[in-house]
Length: 546
Image (tube, rainbow, N blue to C red; front, side, top):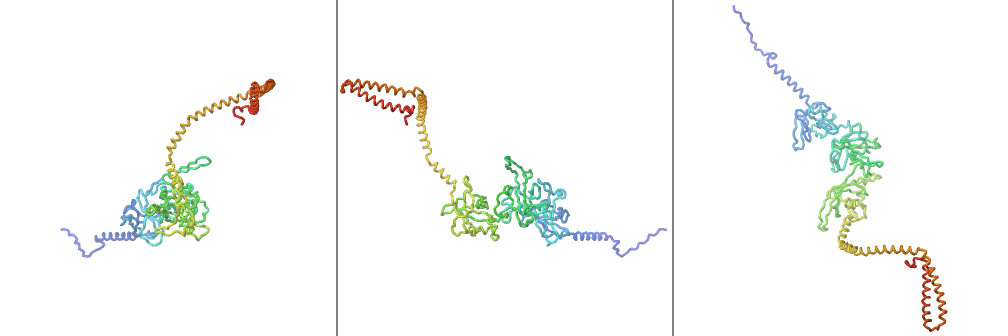
Protein backbone atom coordinates (compact mmCIF):
# COMPACT_ATOMS: atom_id res chain seq x y z
CA UNK A 1 0.00 0.00 0.00
CA UNK A 2 1.63 3.28 -1.00
CA UNK A 3 2.62 5.74 1.62
CA UNK A 4 0.86 9.10 1.71
CA UNK A 5 2.90 12.33 1.82
CA UNK A 6 1.99 14.80 4.54
CA UNK A 7 -0.09 17.62 3.40
CA UNK A 8 1.37 21.08 3.76
CA UNK A 9 -0.92 23.76 4.84
CA UNK A 10 -0.29 27.04 3.03
CA UNK A 11 -0.24 30.09 5.27
CA UNK A 12 -1.70 33.30 4.05
CA UNK A 13 -0.22 35.42 6.92
CA UNK A 14 3.03 37.58 6.38
CA UNK A 15 5.79 37.03 8.97
CA UNK A 16 8.26 39.96 8.96
CA UNK A 17 10.89 38.27 11.06
CA UNK A 18 11.01 35.27 8.79
CA UNK A 19 10.84 37.34 5.64
CA UNK A 20 13.88 37.87 3.38
CA UNK A 21 13.36 41.65 3.59
CA UNK A 22 14.67 41.74 7.10
CA UNK A 23 18.26 41.65 5.82
CA UNK A 24 18.17 44.88 3.76
CA UNK A 25 16.10 46.48 6.47
CA UNK A 26 18.76 45.74 9.03
CA UNK A 27 21.36 47.01 6.55
CA UNK A 28 19.40 50.24 6.17
CA UNK A 29 19.23 50.63 9.90
CA UNK A 30 22.95 50.09 10.25
CA UNK A 31 23.69 52.51 7.40
CA UNK A 32 21.39 55.08 8.93
CA UNK A 33 23.05 54.70 12.27
CA UNK A 34 26.46 55.03 10.72
CA UNK A 35 25.32 58.05 8.78
CA UNK A 36 23.96 59.59 11.93
CA UNK A 37 27.15 58.84 13.73
CA UNK A 38 29.20 60.35 10.86
CA UNK A 39 27.16 63.53 10.49
CA UNK A 40 26.78 63.95 14.20
CA UNK A 41 30.58 63.97 14.46
CA UNK A 42 31.05 66.40 11.60
CA UNK A 43 31.96 69.94 12.39
CA UNK A 44 31.59 73.03 10.24
CA UNK A 45 33.06 73.45 6.77
CA UNK A 46 35.70 76.20 6.58
CA UNK A 47 37.67 78.06 3.92
CA UNK A 48 41.37 78.82 4.21
CA UNK A 49 43.04 81.15 1.69
CA UNK A 50 46.73 80.52 0.96
CA UNK A 51 49.03 82.30 -1.51
CA UNK A 52 49.62 78.95 -3.23
CA UNK A 53 48.99 75.25 -2.80
CA UNK A 54 52.16 73.68 -1.44
CA UNK A 55 51.58 69.93 -1.77
CA UNK A 56 48.06 69.70 -0.34
CA UNK A 57 45.74 67.05 -1.81
CA UNK A 58 41.94 67.03 -1.64
CA UNK A 59 40.52 64.05 0.30
CA UNK A 60 43.94 63.20 1.73
CA UNK A 61 45.66 66.13 3.45
CA UNK A 62 44.73 66.50 7.09
CA UNK A 63 44.41 69.43 9.46
CA UNK A 64 46.21 68.87 12.76
CA UNK A 65 46.04 70.64 16.06
CA UNK A 66 48.88 69.66 18.38
CA UNK A 67 49.56 66.75 16.04
CA UNK A 68 45.96 65.47 16.45
CA UNK A 69 43.82 65.28 13.26
CA UNK A 70 40.86 67.66 13.56
CA UNK A 71 39.79 67.95 9.92
CA UNK A 72 40.49 67.03 6.31
CA UNK A 73 40.89 68.95 3.08
CA UNK A 74 37.94 68.23 0.79
CA UNK A 75 38.50 70.63 -2.11
CA UNK A 76 41.15 73.01 -3.48
CA UNK A 77 40.32 75.72 -6.01
CA UNK A 78 41.64 79.06 -7.27
CA UNK A 79 40.35 82.35 -5.98
CA UNK A 80 38.15 84.28 -8.37
CA UNK A 81 40.75 87.02 -8.77
CA UNK A 82 43.53 84.48 -9.16
CA UNK A 83 45.59 85.88 -6.27
CA UNK A 84 45.69 82.65 -4.32
CA UNK A 85 44.02 79.32 -3.65
CA UNK A 86 40.98 78.47 -1.53
CA UNK A 87 41.26 75.31 0.54
CA UNK A 88 37.89 73.94 1.67
CA UNK A 89 38.12 71.66 4.68
CA UNK A 90 35.68 69.65 6.74
CA UNK A 91 36.40 70.07 10.43
CA UNK A 92 35.53 67.72 13.28
CA UNK A 93 32.88 68.74 15.73
CA UNK A 94 35.37 68.88 18.60
CA UNK A 95 37.36 71.54 16.72
CA UNK A 96 34.44 73.97 16.39
CA UNK A 97 35.15 75.90 19.65
CA UNK A 98 38.70 76.61 18.36
CA UNK A 99 37.56 78.22 15.11
CA UNK A 100 37.64 81.89 16.05
CA UNK A 101 39.56 85.12 15.47
CA UNK A 102 42.62 83.66 17.22
CA UNK A 103 42.96 80.68 14.89
CA UNK A 104 46.05 80.51 12.67
CA UNK A 105 46.58 78.04 9.80
CA UNK A 106 49.80 77.28 7.92
CA UNK A 107 51.07 74.54 5.65
CA UNK A 108 53.58 72.12 7.18
CA UNK A 109 56.09 70.80 4.67
CA UNK A 110 59.61 69.35 4.79
CA UNK A 111 62.32 72.05 4.95
CA UNK A 112 66.04 71.60 4.61
CA UNK A 113 68.49 74.43 5.24
CA UNK A 114 71.82 75.09 6.93
CA UNK A 115 70.17 75.29 10.34
CA UNK A 116 68.70 71.78 10.09
CA UNK A 117 65.76 69.71 8.85
CA UNK A 118 62.09 70.20 9.82
CA UNK A 119 58.79 68.56 8.84
CA UNK A 120 60.31 65.11 8.28
CA UNK A 121 56.97 63.42 9.16
CA UNK A 122 55.46 64.87 5.99
CA UNK A 123 57.73 62.71 3.86
CA UNK A 124 55.45 59.74 4.74
CA UNK A 125 52.06 61.30 5.49
CA UNK A 126 52.30 64.17 3.03
CA UNK A 127 51.95 67.88 3.65
CA UNK A 128 49.25 68.94 6.07
CA UNK A 129 47.80 72.10 7.59
CA UNK A 130 48.87 73.08 11.08
CA UNK A 131 46.56 74.92 13.48
CA UNK A 132 47.21 77.19 16.44
CA UNK A 133 44.32 78.57 18.46
CA UNK A 134 42.72 78.85 21.84
CA UNK A 135 39.21 77.97 22.89
CA UNK A 136 36.46 80.57 22.96
CA UNK A 137 35.76 83.71 21.01
CA UNK A 138 33.47 84.36 18.06
CA UNK A 139 32.99 81.54 15.58
CA UNK A 140 34.62 82.09 12.18
CA UNK A 141 34.66 79.93 9.05
CA UNK A 142 36.94 81.90 6.69
CA UNK A 143 40.65 82.36 7.39
CA UNK A 144 43.79 83.75 5.78
CA UNK A 145 46.56 81.19 5.95
CA UNK A 146 50.10 82.13 7.01
CA UNK A 147 53.10 81.79 4.73
CA UNK A 148 55.28 80.56 7.59
CA UNK A 149 54.95 78.48 10.69
CA UNK A 150 53.10 80.28 13.44
CA UNK A 151 54.88 80.43 16.78
CA UNK A 152 52.76 80.79 19.87
CA UNK A 153 53.49 83.47 22.41
CA UNK A 154 53.64 80.73 25.02
CA UNK A 155 56.86 79.49 23.42
CA UNK A 156 58.46 82.88 22.99
CA UNK A 157 57.95 86.48 21.88
CA UNK A 158 57.83 88.37 18.61
CA UNK A 159 59.82 91.61 18.20
CA UNK A 160 59.93 94.12 15.37
CA UNK A 161 63.24 95.42 14.00
CA UNK A 162 63.29 98.39 11.62
CA UNK A 163 65.93 99.15 9.03
CA UNK A 164 66.14 101.84 6.37
CA UNK A 165 66.78 99.27 3.65
CA UNK A 166 66.64 95.52 3.33
CA UNK A 167 69.72 93.32 3.60
CA UNK A 168 70.13 90.37 1.27
CA UNK A 169 71.49 88.30 4.16
CA UNK A 170 68.36 88.87 6.28
CA UNK A 171 65.42 86.72 5.24
CA UNK A 172 62.89 84.35 6.83
CA UNK A 173 64.82 81.66 8.64
CA UNK A 174 67.90 83.80 9.38
CA UNK A 175 69.07 82.87 12.91
CA UNK A 176 69.30 85.35 15.79
CA UNK A 177 72.24 85.02 18.22
CA UNK A 178 73.08 86.26 21.70
CA UNK A 179 76.75 85.76 22.63
CA UNK A 180 77.04 83.16 19.85
CA UNK A 181 74.07 81.18 21.22
CA UNK A 182 71.14 80.76 18.86
CA UNK A 183 68.08 82.21 20.58
CA UNK A 184 65.61 82.79 17.74
CA UNK A 185 65.03 83.32 14.06
CA UNK A 186 63.62 85.78 11.53
CA UNK A 187 59.98 85.03 10.75
CA UNK A 188 58.97 87.79 8.31
CA UNK A 189 60.57 90.54 6.26
CA UNK A 190 58.19 93.17 4.86
CA UNK A 191 57.75 96.86 4.11
CA UNK A 192 56.18 98.92 6.87
CA UNK A 193 52.84 100.66 6.41
CA UNK A 194 54.46 103.90 5.17
CA UNK A 195 56.80 102.11 2.74
CA UNK A 196 59.71 104.03 4.28
CA UNK A 197 61.27 101.24 6.36
CA UNK A 198 61.69 97.49 6.20
CA UNK A 199 60.22 95.59 9.13
CA UNK A 200 62.09 92.48 10.23
CA UNK A 201 59.95 90.42 12.61
CA UNK A 202 61.94 88.01 14.75
CA UNK A 203 60.86 85.32 17.20
CA UNK A 204 62.90 84.81 20.38
CA UNK A 205 62.48 81.53 22.28
CA UNK A 206 60.87 81.86 25.69
CA UNK A 207 64.08 80.79 27.45
CA UNK A 208 65.85 83.93 26.22
CA UNK A 209 63.09 86.57 26.16
CA UNK A 210 64.26 87.85 29.57
CA UNK A 211 67.45 89.07 27.87
CA UNK A 212 65.57 91.37 25.48
CA UNK A 213 65.16 94.86 26.96
CA UNK A 214 64.33 98.28 25.56
CA UNK A 215 68.05 99.12 25.48
CA UNK A 216 68.96 96.02 23.42
CA UNK A 217 70.87 96.63 20.19
CA UNK A 218 70.40 94.45 17.11
CA UNK A 219 72.80 94.33 14.16
CA UNK A 220 73.57 92.20 11.13
CA UNK A 221 76.54 90.00 11.90
CA UNK A 222 79.49 90.79 9.63
CA UNK A 223 81.03 88.00 7.59
CA UNK A 224 84.51 89.48 8.08
CA UNK A 225 85.80 91.59 10.99
CA UNK A 226 89.30 93.07 11.14
CA UNK A 227 90.75 95.24 13.89
CA UNK A 228 94.21 96.30 15.06
CA UNK A 229 94.89 95.02 18.59
CA UNK A 230 98.20 95.85 20.31
CA UNK A 231 99.87 96.38 16.96
CA UNK A 232 98.63 93.06 15.54
CA UNK A 233 95.89 92.65 12.93
CA UNK A 234 93.10 90.46 14.29
CA UNK A 235 90.89 89.03 11.53
CA UNK A 236 87.71 87.08 12.34
CA UNK A 237 85.77 85.18 9.67
CA UNK A 238 82.13 84.28 10.35
CA UNK A 239 81.02 80.61 10.34
CA UNK A 240 80.03 79.00 7.06
CA UNK A 241 76.35 79.12 8.08
CA UNK A 242 76.53 82.91 8.39
CA UNK A 243 78.26 83.20 5.02
CA UNK A 244 75.43 81.25 3.37
CA UNK A 245 72.34 82.52 5.18
CA UNK A 246 73.45 85.50 7.27
CA UNK A 247 72.75 86.12 10.93
CA UNK A 248 71.48 88.76 13.37
CA UNK A 249 73.12 89.35 16.72
CA UNK A 250 72.05 91.46 19.68
CA UNK A 251 73.39 92.65 23.00
CA UNK A 252 71.94 94.37 26.04
CA UNK A 253 73.28 96.28 29.02
CA UNK A 254 70.65 94.90 31.37
CA UNK A 255 69.91 98.35 32.79
CA UNK A 256 66.26 98.07 31.74
CA UNK A 257 65.74 94.46 32.78
CA UNK A 258 62.93 95.45 35.14
CA UNK A 259 60.98 97.10 32.33
CA UNK A 260 59.03 94.89 29.95
CA UNK A 261 59.22 95.70 26.25
CA UNK A 262 55.94 97.38 25.18
CA UNK A 263 53.96 95.71 22.41
CA UNK A 264 54.36 98.77 20.17
CA UNK A 265 58.10 99.13 20.78
CA UNK A 266 60.41 98.71 17.77
CA UNK A 267 64.16 98.18 17.65
CA UNK A 268 66.56 99.54 15.04
CA UNK A 269 68.46 96.95 13.01
CA UNK A 270 71.97 98.30 12.39
CA UNK A 271 74.00 97.26 9.35
CA UNK A 272 76.96 96.10 11.49
CA UNK A 273 78.36 96.23 15.00
CA UNK A 274 80.42 99.35 14.31
CA UNK A 275 77.22 101.26 13.54
CA UNK A 276 75.95 100.37 17.03
CA UNK A 277 78.99 101.98 18.66
CA UNK A 278 78.78 105.27 16.74
CA UNK A 279 77.24 108.44 18.15
CA UNK A 280 73.46 108.39 18.26
CA UNK A 281 71.25 111.31 17.38
CA UNK A 282 67.49 111.37 17.76
CA UNK A 283 65.27 108.73 19.31
CA UNK A 284 65.59 104.99 18.84
CA UNK A 285 62.15 105.12 17.27
CA UNK A 286 62.61 107.30 14.22
CA UNK A 287 59.99 109.87 13.23
CA UNK A 288 60.53 110.18 9.50
CA UNK A 289 58.94 113.01 7.52
CA UNK A 290 59.24 113.78 3.79
CA UNK A 291 59.90 117.37 2.69
CA UNK A 292 60.14 118.96 -0.73
CA UNK A 293 62.99 121.30 -1.78
CA UNK A 294 63.00 123.66 -4.79
CA UNK A 295 66.41 124.85 -5.93
CA UNK A 296 68.07 126.42 -8.96
CA UNK A 297 71.55 125.50 -7.73
CA UNK A 298 73.23 122.93 -9.96
CA UNK A 299 72.52 119.50 -8.52
CA UNK A 300 74.38 117.48 -11.14
CA UNK A 301 76.37 115.73 -8.38
CA UNK A 302 73.44 115.22 -6.00
CA UNK A 303 72.38 111.56 -6.00
CA UNK A 304 69.47 109.61 -4.61
CA UNK A 305 70.66 108.38 -1.24
CA UNK A 306 72.85 111.45 -0.61
CA UNK A 307 72.79 112.42 3.05
CA UNK A 308 70.85 115.21 4.72
CA UNK A 309 72.95 116.69 7.53
CA UNK A 310 72.43 119.03 10.43
CA UNK A 311 75.42 120.19 12.49
CA UNK A 312 77.52 117.61 10.58
CA UNK A 313 75.26 114.73 11.72
CA UNK A 314 73.33 112.67 9.21
CA UNK A 315 69.61 112.97 9.89
CA UNK A 316 68.08 111.81 6.59
CA UNK A 317 68.50 110.98 2.92
CA UNK A 318 67.58 112.22 -0.52
CA UNK A 319 64.88 109.90 -1.86
CA UNK A 320 63.86 111.50 -5.17
CA UNK A 321 65.26 114.06 -7.67
CA UNK A 322 63.44 115.56 -10.64
CA UNK A 323 64.64 118.32 -12.99
CA UNK A 324 62.77 120.78 -15.21
CA UNK A 325 63.81 123.56 -17.61
CA UNK A 326 63.17 127.22 -16.72
CA UNK A 327 62.65 129.21 -19.94
CA UNK A 328 63.19 132.54 -18.14
CA UNK A 329 66.57 131.78 -16.55
CA UNK A 330 67.57 129.03 -19.01
CA UNK A 331 68.61 126.93 -16.01
CA UNK A 332 67.52 123.52 -14.78
CA UNK A 333 65.30 123.74 -11.71
CA UNK A 334 65.62 120.96 -9.18
CA UNK A 335 62.79 119.38 -7.21
CA UNK A 336 64.28 117.26 -4.42
CA UNK A 337 62.43 115.05 -1.94
CA UNK A 338 64.25 114.44 1.33
CA UNK A 339 63.42 112.16 4.22
CA UNK A 340 64.29 113.67 7.62
CA UNK A 341 64.16 112.13 11.09
CA UNK A 342 62.32 114.86 13.00
CA UNK A 343 63.03 113.17 16.35
CA UNK A 344 66.50 114.76 16.07
CA UNK A 345 64.94 118.13 16.93
CA UNK A 346 63.10 116.90 20.02
CA UNK A 347 64.21 118.67 23.22
CA UNK A 348 64.24 116.24 26.18
CA UNK A 349 63.86 119.16 28.60
CA UNK A 350 60.46 120.05 27.10
CA UNK A 351 58.12 117.09 26.99
CA UNK A 352 55.33 119.14 25.42
CA UNK A 353 57.17 119.91 22.17
CA UNK A 354 57.74 117.30 19.50
CA UNK A 355 60.70 117.15 17.15
CA UNK A 356 58.48 118.07 14.22
CA UNK A 357 57.18 121.17 15.98
CA UNK A 358 60.71 122.26 16.87
CA UNK A 359 61.84 121.78 13.27
CA UNK A 360 59.05 124.01 11.99
CA UNK A 361 59.94 126.61 14.61
CA UNK A 362 63.63 126.43 13.63
CA UNK A 363 62.71 127.13 10.00
CA UNK A 364 60.76 130.21 11.08
CA UNK A 365 63.88 131.34 12.94
CA UNK A 366 66.16 130.98 9.91
CA UNK A 367 66.90 127.27 9.33
CA UNK A 368 67.30 126.67 5.60
CA UNK A 369 68.20 123.80 3.30
CA UNK A 370 71.33 124.28 1.21
CA UNK A 371 72.85 122.15 -1.55
CA UNK A 372 76.53 121.92 -0.62
CA UNK A 373 79.64 119.97 -1.68
CA UNK A 374 80.39 116.89 0.38
CA UNK A 375 84.09 116.96 -0.50
CA UNK A 376 86.22 119.17 -2.81
CA UNK A 377 87.78 116.28 -4.73
CA UNK A 378 84.79 114.44 -6.19
CA UNK A 379 82.37 117.35 -5.87
CA UNK A 380 79.64 115.09 -4.47
CA UNK A 381 76.74 117.04 -3.05
CA UNK A 382 74.45 116.72 -0.06
CA UNK A 383 71.67 118.66 1.64
CA UNK A 384 72.88 120.75 4.57
CA UNK A 385 70.48 122.30 7.09
CA UNK A 386 72.00 125.55 8.37
CA UNK A 387 70.87 128.74 10.09
CA UNK A 388 71.24 131.84 7.93
CA UNK A 389 70.37 135.51 8.26
CA UNK A 390 66.63 135.92 8.13
CA UNK A 391 65.51 136.31 4.55
CA UNK A 392 61.94 137.11 5.32
CA UNK A 393 59.28 135.42 7.38
CA UNK A 394 59.61 132.06 5.64
CA UNK A 395 58.29 128.84 7.05
CA UNK A 396 57.50 125.29 5.99
CA UNK A 397 54.34 125.41 3.89
CA UNK A 398 52.06 122.68 2.64
CA UNK A 399 52.49 121.83 -1.05
CA UNK A 400 50.61 119.46 -3.34
CA UNK A 401 51.75 116.32 -1.56
CA UNK A 402 54.65 117.11 0.78
CA UNK A 403 55.58 120.09 2.96
CA UNK A 404 57.87 122.59 1.18
CA UNK A 405 61.05 123.61 3.04
CA UNK A 406 62.75 126.92 2.03
CA UNK A 407 66.25 126.79 0.54
CA UNK A 408 69.21 129.15 0.10
CA UNK A 409 72.08 129.22 -2.38
CA UNK A 410 75.43 127.83 -1.38
CA UNK A 411 77.71 130.39 0.24
CA UNK A 412 80.84 129.10 -1.43
CA UNK A 413 81.18 128.29 -5.08
CA UNK A 414 81.98 124.89 -6.39
CA UNK A 415 85.66 124.37 -5.63
CA UNK A 416 86.09 121.87 -8.44
CA UNK A 417 84.53 124.33 -10.89
CA UNK A 418 86.91 127.05 -9.74
CA UNK A 419 89.87 124.71 -10.07
CA UNK A 420 88.65 123.80 -13.55
CA UNK A 421 88.54 127.50 -14.46
CA UNK A 422 92.11 127.99 -13.25
CA UNK A 423 93.27 125.00 -15.27
CA UNK A 424 91.51 126.39 -18.32
CA UNK A 425 93.31 129.74 -17.93
CA UNK A 426 96.63 127.95 -17.57
CA UNK A 427 95.89 126.01 -20.75
CA UNK A 428 95.29 129.30 -22.57
CA UNK A 429 98.78 130.63 -21.73
CA UNK A 430 101.44 130.42 -24.56
CA UNK A 431 103.36 127.81 -22.63
CA UNK A 432 104.91 126.20 -25.71
CA UNK A 433 106.39 129.51 -26.97
CA UNK A 434 107.63 130.28 -23.47
CA UNK A 435 109.31 126.90 -23.19
CA UNK A 436 110.94 127.29 -26.62
CA UNK A 437 112.34 130.70 -25.63
CA UNK A 438 113.60 129.31 -22.35
CA UNK A 439 115.30 126.40 -24.10
CA UNK A 440 116.97 128.86 -26.52
CA UNK A 441 118.31 131.01 -23.66
CA UNK A 442 119.63 127.93 -21.89
CA UNK A 443 121.42 126.73 -25.01
CA UNK A 444 122.94 130.20 -25.68
CA UNK A 445 124.07 130.50 -22.08
CA UNK A 446 125.51 127.02 -21.88
CA UNK A 447 128.87 127.90 -23.56
CA UNK A 448 129.64 131.11 -21.54
CA UNK A 449 128.71 129.36 -18.36
CA UNK A 450 131.01 126.48 -19.18
CA UNK A 451 133.83 128.99 -19.98
CA UNK A 452 133.16 130.84 -16.74
CA UNK A 453 133.56 127.58 -14.88
CA UNK A 454 137.04 127.17 -16.44
CA UNK A 455 138.01 130.77 -15.48
CA UNK A 456 136.87 130.16 -11.91
CA UNK A 457 138.98 127.03 -11.69
CA UNK A 458 142.07 128.89 -13.00
CA UNK A 459 141.46 131.83 -10.62
CA UNK A 460 141.18 129.41 -7.73
CA UNK A 461 144.54 127.88 -8.66
CA UNK A 462 146.14 131.33 -8.95
CA UNK A 463 144.89 132.41 -5.54
CA UNK A 464 146.26 129.22 -4.04
CA UNK A 465 149.68 129.89 -5.57
CA UNK A 466 149.71 133.54 -4.39
CA UNK A 467 148.79 132.48 -0.88
CA UNK A 468 151.65 130.01 -1.00
CA UNK A 469 154.01 132.80 -2.26
CA UNK A 470 153.03 135.37 0.35
CA UNK A 471 153.41 132.78 3.07
CA UNK A 472 157.11 132.29 2.43
CA UNK A 473 159.69 133.82 4.82
CA UNK A 474 161.59 135.47 1.96
CA UNK A 475 158.44 137.39 0.95
CA UNK A 476 157.92 138.54 4.52
CA UNK A 477 161.57 139.91 4.65
CA UNK A 478 161.14 141.80 1.36
CA UNK A 479 159.86 145.07 2.93
CA UNK A 480 162.93 145.33 5.24
CA UNK A 481 165.38 144.86 2.35
CA UNK A 482 163.57 147.45 0.22
CA UNK A 483 163.73 149.90 3.11
CA UNK A 484 167.50 149.38 3.47
CA UNK A 485 167.91 150.00 -0.27
CA UNK A 486 165.99 153.26 0.01
CA UNK A 487 168.15 154.41 2.93
CA UNK A 488 171.33 153.74 0.89
CA UNK A 489 169.80 155.60 -2.02
CA UNK A 490 169.09 158.58 0.25
CA UNK A 491 172.70 158.74 1.43
CA UNK A 492 173.90 158.62 -2.19
CA UNK A 493 171.58 161.47 -3.09
CA UNK A 494 172.92 163.63 -0.26
CA UNK A 495 176.49 163.06 -1.44
CA UNK A 496 175.48 163.91 -4.95
CA UNK A 497 173.86 167.13 -3.71
CA UNK A 498 177.14 168.28 -2.25
CA UNK A 499 178.88 167.63 -5.55
CA UNK A 500 176.23 169.48 -7.48
CA UNK A 501 176.66 172.61 -5.35
CA UNK A 502 180.04 172.99 -6.99
CA UNK A 503 178.37 173.71 -10.31
CA UNK A 504 176.18 176.64 -11.18
CA UNK A 505 172.55 176.55 -10.48
CA UNK A 506 171.76 177.06 -14.08
CA UNK A 507 174.09 174.40 -15.39
CA UNK A 508 172.67 171.42 -17.30
CA UNK A 509 173.96 168.95 -14.73
CA UNK A 510 172.21 170.81 -11.91
CA UNK A 511 168.88 170.82 -13.67
CA UNK A 512 169.09 167.08 -14.53
CA UNK A 513 170.09 166.13 -11.05
CA UNK A 514 167.25 168.27 -9.59
CA UNK A 515 164.70 166.55 -11.80
CA UNK A 516 166.10 163.19 -10.85
CA UNK A 517 165.86 164.03 -7.15
CA UNK A 518 162.21 165.03 -7.50
CA UNK A 519 161.43 161.71 -9.15
CA UNK A 520 163.36 159.76 -6.56
CA UNK A 521 161.66 161.66 -3.73
CA UNK A 522 158.21 160.99 -5.13
CA UNK A 523 159.09 157.36 -5.67
CA UNK A 524 160.40 157.13 -2.12
CA UNK A 525 157.11 158.47 -0.67
CA UNK A 526 155.06 156.07 -2.72
CA UNK A 527 157.33 153.20 -1.79
CA UNK A 528 156.96 153.99 1.92
CA UNK A 529 153.19 153.85 1.60
CA UNK A 530 153.50 150.57 -0.28
CA UNK A 531 155.74 149.10 2.38
CA UNK A 532 153.35 150.04 5.16
CA UNK A 533 150.53 148.41 3.31
CA UNK A 534 152.59 145.32 2.63
CA UNK A 535 153.59 144.99 6.28
CA UNK A 536 149.98 145.27 7.37
CA UNK A 537 148.54 142.90 4.73
CA UNK A 538 151.03 140.74 2.80
CA UNK A 539 148.44 139.56 0.22
CA UNK A 540 147.25 143.10 -0.54
CA UNK A 541 149.11 142.94 -3.86
CA UNK A 542 146.32 140.55 -5.03
CA UNK A 543 143.21 141.46 -3.08
CA UNK A 544 143.90 145.14 -2.34
CA UNK A 545 143.92 146.98 0.95
CA UNK A 546 140.13 146.97 1.55
